[in-house]
Image (cartoon, rainbow, N blue to C red; front, side, top):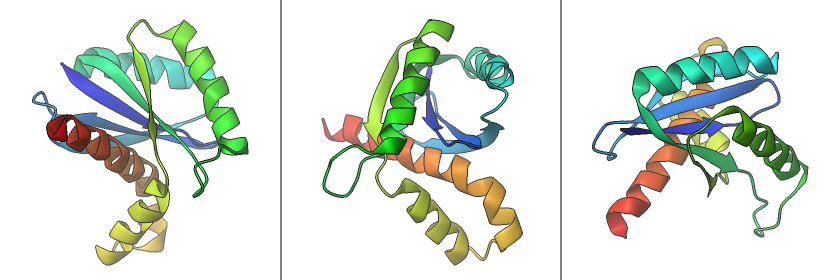
Length: 138
């Protein structure tokens, strides 16, 4: 069984998945956030194909640890998602994952046009890897 991570955005939702040993995160894709029913359809397919046992959702926080408007949108997303899927959901701090993902892609010489489609899934993979690392250290 695997863990699937979601990096929620208003336009795109980044998706990453762990390996079966839960040691390595791999970016998978981004799914357009709207229409939401199409997002849910694709998510359910990924859950089935990847044999997912847990969905990890990035919770944006301000640098001081407080929650802002983006966190409010993620909480609303989680509320709806809990009704739509039967597997457990877990929230994980995602501070700076999108910036870190963009920096990694720039360092990897990924062009601006190509970066746009890769930032979200890379951010989801960074989020997931941070969670997986915490499991190893626990």
